[in-house]
Length: 305
Image (cartoon, rainbow, N blue to C red; front, side, top):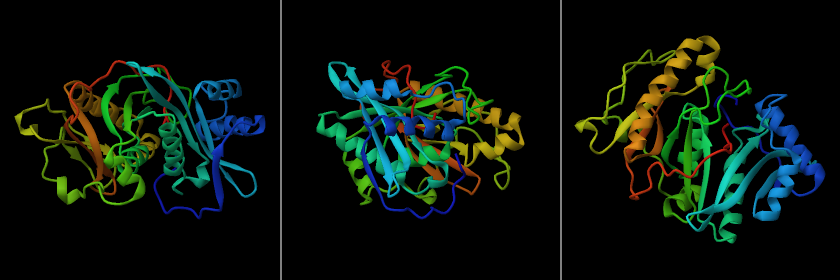
């Protein structure tokens, strides 16, 4: 995924269901463009087509020339006697990223789910991917209550090489007021750094002006009674390209900081940029009791891979 930058110009396009064979084949080609040619976990045409018979969703942003710019794909199932949706994949053509397609595709997915009386959507993403975290938390209004270590084992995507497949499980409460406001851009904005900079950090960070380096992780303590910050680098791929050992150290530190806190009933609610090189998750005690670490999520990929 390309680093954050200025948004590209967005040509006219439409978001619509993808059912024709040609459209589904375009989804397969786009997956390889995003995650690398030969990526072994591509969702094939057969799955994309069959899932739609049972409430699955495949929607794409198609431009004036008929080119597929991005798509979202998810499966519908039953959890605790209620219908829920698992968003298996979201992909946007690399040159079109940062153009708002991810948010618009997720909005389309939300509308379709609400039409089916589905109120909860789940997916996974890498806790070290700040761009995906910003979209998910800041623009879509998800919360995170579960951390899974090496959820998908060894991945052959170049994006994941050397970092394993630790994942957050996103929980998108579709009819939550916070979700609606963030999607519509009216209030409920993420906090500014000045609003949270006083909170304790789960571990110190040095070298914030260049390649930030995590320090020793502190166990949860009484000073974290209301909230705690967990730092992540703004661009883990740049770090990995220059220092694979440092990238691995970030995985180790964030896993040690995040996994026990979420298992203990906390949730991730925001991502805040502190410097050009560093962002911080804001963790607070879960607002909805009895939902931390729900043991019902397995076996499918999320949008960030």
